[in-house]
Image 1 (cartoon, each protein chain N blue to C red):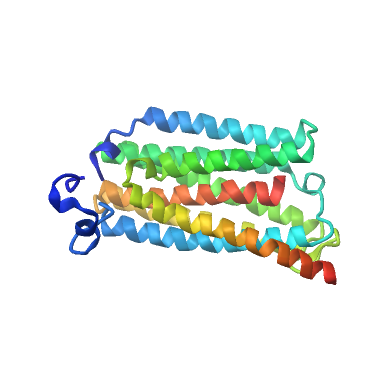
Image 2: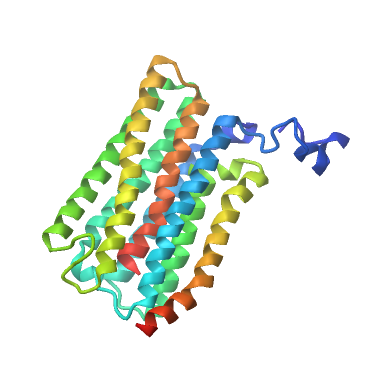
Length: 99
Length: 205
């Protein structure tokens, strides 16, 4: 626990809470309420998920108040996971297309 | 951050051993290592879901099968529980033990409500004819990925409820420090973080 952690204001938690709920409402409405082109809908959902994940990591998991090295050990494996996804999708799609 | 200045604080001095380079306690570091390995488990499952989905010709329309509004409400409940958890940790750090336990109790209740709604969602899905390896919509992988991914997450929520329950007991008895609660809060934040990706992957996209 560092000095900065102790000063983390509850106001930041509440702002994060409101933004997270707002983004969830947007996510539900782009699927159920608005009829949007697929590209737009997917883009909104992906960006929304990334913002939500960053907010939870930064405030609720205190990464904002840790050393940068802690952020790296949390972030880098997940970036590698995304890389793995893009590496195997074309192959999987090709094999399944052969069936 | 005591070791920020001076000649000693070269990169080599920081990382060559004999000190804690992340400036966190061993408990917190161990929780982070567990969470990273757990995150990779979920990442593997979600990547599997997307590979199967993009490789297959069709995927059922979730909005016609599942109750998106109900699951949206579940998502909101989980977000609220993360917020009460963060406030509970904050209160514990300020030494307000009673307040910390109250917010922790709210978090636990929200966790059980989420798990209960997930169970209702499952029984509805099973009632419609979905099984682990077959379902009426003609894409076996659809119900398989649903049960495995939401099931593993549901177990994390339930397990987390009992973890937090134990922490509430320890805080009341004065057996745990604020840092112990903060580490439990990391776990709970992670459960919410994973749901942020499961929820669009399974229900929305």
